[in-house]
Length: 96
Image (cartoon, rainbow, N blue to C red; front, side, top):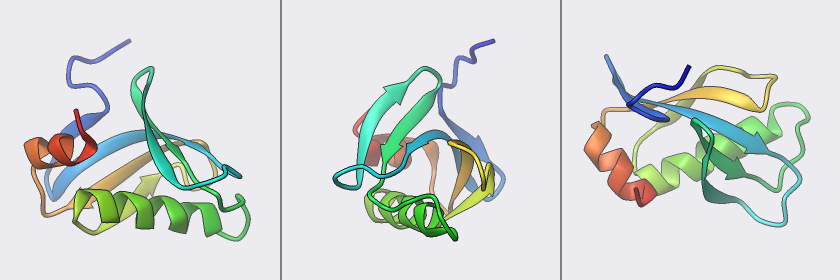
């Protein structure tokens, strides 16, 4: 079931983003919307938490706030939290 808020939604401590991660890419980038998630590509392999760290670094740099993974540490489908920002700021930084 789809939700009208899309992949970016308000949370108590900031903003939650539902993301879809592709590892082993040629470069780190935010691709756009993939279904109900933000599609993110990272060059790092999904080994020893390297891809998760790359995802957090990429999103933190784009959003301008600390980002941590809330769930999906071992999955392509992740829920991340951008702390101390609002939905409008995150959507603006993501270009949507």
